[in-house]
Picture (spheres, one colour):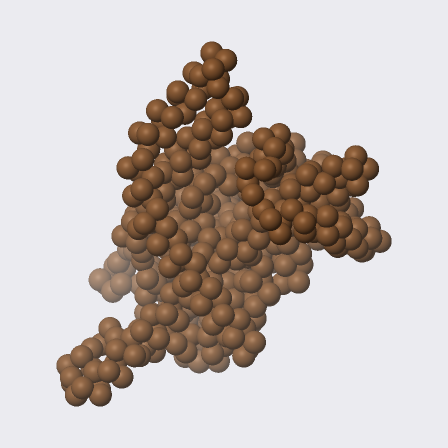
Length: 484
């Protein structure tokens, strides 16, 4: 595989010593170029790489990419691009954009690669690309992905399950979900009024933990089935690290080609499928006259609400992104917060007549980033403002958790280990309650997994911050990885 930074070779000098115009290599096979449905007033475009990465292209960069056929030189490309976008582009600008933005992505074919016929939308049947580069906010998404169920085994089930999105079935199911919630919380109300965790039988706690874990594959199937119901493909189902724990995922990056409304259905498909199980537990509680089973409904709703956490790339993150039409929400939040902070510092510097600080180029540039959302409507900007507030509050909460609770866990970890060992030994010897041993063992497992994930997340956050690369000024481009 050819390194993208070396994909463009310098042209050889002519006989009279003059440097001829360089012929730019064509695109690699396996790429897809098409329109992206976003909330921007100007049409955005999507570049999908064979490895699953997606890049949002502005109109000018999209038209430039479409001209890379391996036959035109930089002068010909500049002339054709100038005609397409309605302003003059020089050959030097084309060369700079190709070298600095396109070649590093590894999307240019090395010389000598056989020509392949292009499909519709510049989509080709197969190909290869550069290894996926971590996105700037990759540490807030799924890390260390481990595929468990290959897509070919998952597809038949998803193909059948997609029928649950037909309106004739979806409407009655949604009504049943609403009715199950009303019944469940009506029955749980007396217990919630005087809630005492110790009054809940151990069997119910174990049922809650088991049910939440068993339902996870069904949740992921909801995303895959929704994607297939709109004609999009999905990848394997697996697990990965995210923040404080291990999460499941199914790769549905292909849905970026869909309209926003259909992407939103895919985003909420997991919650839709998971909510169906609440109907089953409500029926179980009603038929068997066992209201304690309804604690599973409460736990299931809590798990689904956690998906709305704005700090990590969970279902709620993608739903907000598709509902507003603003990709790269984390990056946008950073731009808005940075712009706000820089503007306030400049205002203070001008008020105090600190001329050097008020003219600091980096602060002025950061403050000007506030206009990056001018291409979106007022509703999208308001939604991003609210999302930014939730993001800051969530970040503050997790920071307080790290500062106050995690040190206590680290200091008490040896005691937790000893307590778990003694409790299990006593239970095996018949000298203690088995329920206490199970709870002590679960506590040790939870704390161990939490500390391990925090350590991994901290390392990856530091690495992502150190490797953050800002694109050079020019034609706008934003990238993100596969959705999960």
